[in-house]
Image (cartoon, rainbow, N blue to C red; front, side, top):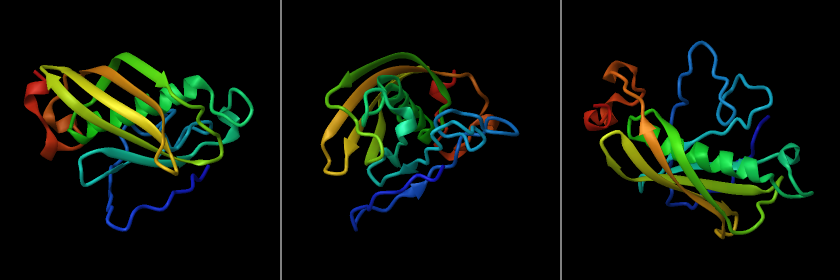
Amino acid sequence: MNLPTTTLKSDEKLAPLPPLTHGAQNHCFGCGTQNTVGLHLEFSLAPDGKVVCHANISPNYEGPPGYLHGGIIATLLDEVMSKANRSKGVVAVTRQLTVEYLRPVPSGSPIRLEGKVDRHEGRKLWTTGQILNAEGTVLASAHGLFIALRLPPTQVENPANFDATVHE
């Protein structure tokens, strides 16, 4: 499934964020290229440090006609917050996820996902994420608590961003 990309502002330059390596094949539901029913999301790192994804989610993932299922909305937010952790050189798992469904998220329309790490203490990372429509209106937002996996620097995908204090 190819997902259309919305037009970026002329001053916004995004660097690619490589996909998380899950082994020989990436079957992640959110970003996995080997998952035939997955969302195939692609993430980038914005100059302000936020992780961004431009997507257009298929009607195959609807709840009510014309709108995404609430579980898919939560998945999108969890995925962008997880990638925010990865942008800091951290692989973490979700401990808590709180979603605010502010407006229905339309299927088959351009949306923008944004995520960032707000703070961390030891292996705990607090992150936020949001889904915006093409006009910039926030449709859903979330905050979450993630726990960093204990990985040696050689297994972290962005060693330059590796924060040893998170992996202790």
